[in-house]
Length: 540
Image (cartoon, rainbow, N blue to C red):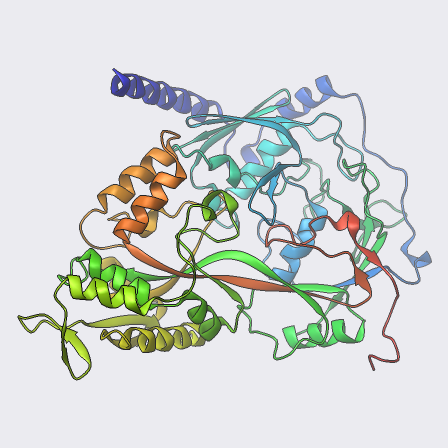
């Protein structure tokens, strides 16, 4: 009966999804029903655009903060190319929710969220206005979704599970293609103001903590100056009033400018290189990118759970983090980041190796005879594997050498094969490997199912039955994350190694910077303050 009830609920959800998808506004901006949205807006509000409080930027002689930016990149929160530009967009545009540094959801524009299988209903706060004074409505959110879900958008991948979005009153309804209890955590895309008459050459208007300076004519935008948005919804305002933007060519030049006090703050995810040295304040930022060891369990030896556990026991994930990322990574204690408390409390790994446990596991499987330092069983089958890595990734190379060294201590031989990124992806999908080393970007819904589900191109071998069963139950809200972690740690369809980190660097004059996340680089900015301006004599 329970199974039949689930089937009925699923069919009902699918029928509703189909109906709403047909009724939803098309993704093409030219097909957006501006007239209907404007009529709904006029029914809810009776205000017009704010034409007051225009600033003559010529009267501003100095600013409170300076941030680096990329001059030839557009300030479009969905299509901007550079990390620096996207960072600034976090100041200009708010989202329905955000995920804080502890990976917990906090409501921003959303007042409440209800999840019913594949249906997510978002009730938005009333009274929020954009920086130009126009009220924010559900139509702004549905319009923003359609922009964010386009293929050219940097939010496209995280929104692929959304089948449709519709607006009614102060409620926005999202229909998801696949059910997941954490799907609502993906709704952190920027919300922009819709206006069919807006100048397409100018940036979108947002409701964030800051806005671009608008000159006296009310039209020209100075893209190098941000002003505090005094219409921001949060009564706990930011004390910083003005931010200037400065173009700098490299990470090193930005870091140097922060050290001497001419730039206030920057974030790097280390993809463009790690600063050689930092003579300034900095904070590590967990960016939830998992470095993992893919395992082909079609191989006879690797199909043995004892062998997989021995590999895991022999590897100190803390050592891998240090060797590959210079400490700018967290050694894994399980499949999820140690910073996510909901899961971390059930993960049993310590980050340290246990040579004795590794040897015991191999002994139990009969790999006890050594030949040239390599274990083999009575039939002469050796524990010797090939590991694929991306040839252009020096961090992965260093991590791979460390893993090889650690496994050699328990009699497991690893031969490293450097290959192109596309070659690694293709061979992983084909199952043409023993082991491979790669990174996986975990999104805010914490979905890691692709890493142990066949046919997704990242895992090859027999079905990891317990892991898939408990994970499916967790996704559907029918089981706990603890059950999944227990099953995963028993089967080990892949081996988590470490979670990579980024770095926020800031000048000594900037105080109050606390914990931040990649999606919230200005988290609790209300606590920030600038104590002095410009370089001091000691810094020069």
